Image (cartoon, rainbow, N blue to C red):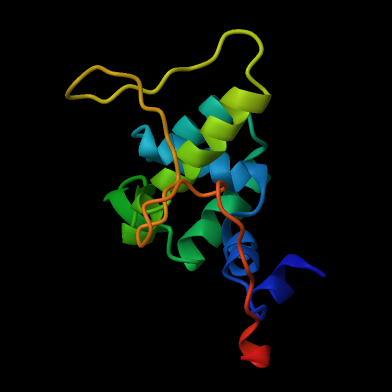
Length: 147
């Protein structure tokens, strides 16, 4: 199944992967949350080829996670800003990071601190309804075609 077909899946995980299911897109979103907005900033941070970066920025913009805004007319220059959907991706980034810290945490790692308290952020996913930590209780998947 190619990424474009994920959009037709009833699974919200598959649909999300069609937008941000590759490492470059996720790292661009990480950098956008860190305050990067310009093409050259992303390129320098990621060491990504310009053509690949152009494609990923276009996709993230088309899919509504970033918006493009012109900041210079002469020469024409644009920056990429997080949309509400892009900002709402931050907890996903932190959950990926928490998994990576636990299972790929050898060596020196970046730390994420709460800017107000200075304490390290330790992400955990909790079910809003039950208050239970996700992964501590069995799940059941209901396909909308089988309701």
